[in-house]
Image (tube, rainbow, N blue to C red; front, side):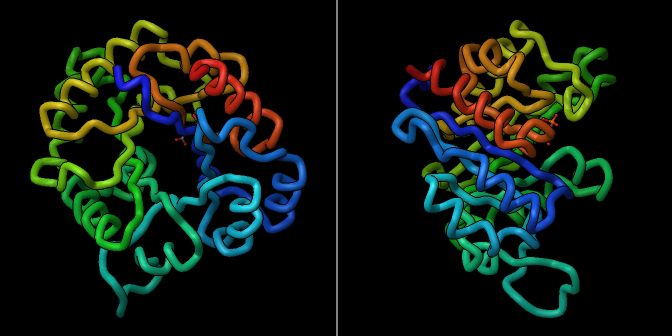
Amino acid sequence: MSSEKRRLIAGNWKMNGSIQDANDFMDAFGGNPAPDHVEVALMPPFTLLHPMSDRLASIGVALGAQNVYYEDKGAFTGSICPMMLRDAGCHYVILGHSERRSIIGESNAQIRNKMNASWLHGLEPILCIGETLEQREKGITNAVLAEQLAILKGAPRDAALTVAYEPVWAIGTGVTASVDQVTETHAFIHEELNRLGHDCRVLYGGSVNPGNAEDLMACPGVEGALVGGASLKADSFMEIVKAAVKAAS
Ligand code: PEP
């Protein structure tokens, strides 16, 4: 299942990190150990994009943002447009993270607007999808994921895209989806993506850590990870990168 795709390990720092933290991280992180097999990317908060950009590039780590607004410029106080992210050296932008869907109230329609704007300016969206525990227990996981993926209808088939399956109940909770759940759900997501005309990488996200990364990265249909908490420390992030390298080789 798409085993030829280069895996991606992406670190989402969320609303964490000072300049000092960023420098400490980059001093300790040795760089991408296997760029042929695995791509490494980091998504720090907006304030750290410029300060981290050159140094991350020099150690083979791509840069991404955690959000973007869909207008090009103007009276949108507090917002950041795609061109500003490109200017700061970003390749990726996380869209539709469950924290933005549930806390900020972001809708699928807004996420699609952000996606279009990102593509227009050469950013690669990492589209996050995932079900809540209640939805899983009701047996409607696939329906929820299909609805979240439906925003890809009519999108250019060759548009740069990565999808991250992040069960909401596994994010920041220390609870990870089982290997069977991950395998089964990734198979459904790949099927749905193929139906929509997209053959992109699908990452797993939700409490990935050095202790579970090897098993998760070995699941069929998993082509990398979106990592929150464990990406804040260089050593734990590197362990996860190494697990992906092992799974890829
Ligand atoms: C995330 O922020 O996307 C995430 C998966 O967080 P954590 O790894 O901390 O669960």
